[in-house]
Length: 165
Image (cartoon, rainbow, N blue to C red; front, side, top):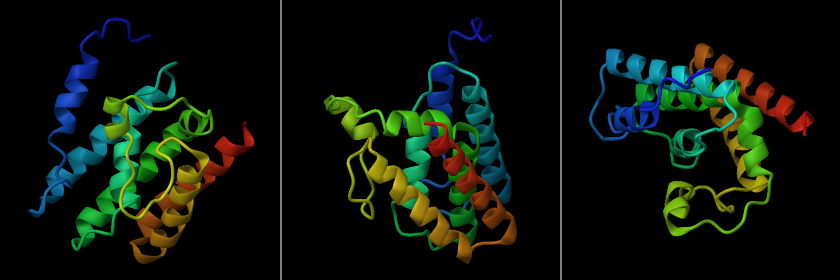
């Protein structure tokens, strides 16, 4: 389907360096909306692909769920919405990778898949998946109704992914 997009991977990687939730500065509503749109597009793009760029959703899930919540409500809600979006569209492939008992990671992959300070699990493991589920459920109670609804949809997608295995 996407054979004519040979440079999409480097283009996506370049865009990932513009994450408005990554620094300590306040980001505008427009920047956060663009970030949500980019993540949503790539998550949807990967839904029908045979290969998933697992590092992209893992980075977003780590940032949203494996670190203390950001002081900025807007940043926190953006991070949780983005993490939820990845789970809504890619929970199946993510769970498949997390539950596949992968071999030891090489050093470059180990850095990409490392966990945040709140998560004490192997980088690619069902334990980490379960941590994400519990943390998402816990933090969804302290956000706006829209983000909480999105998080609940993500939790349902996680349930479906587990049931499909």
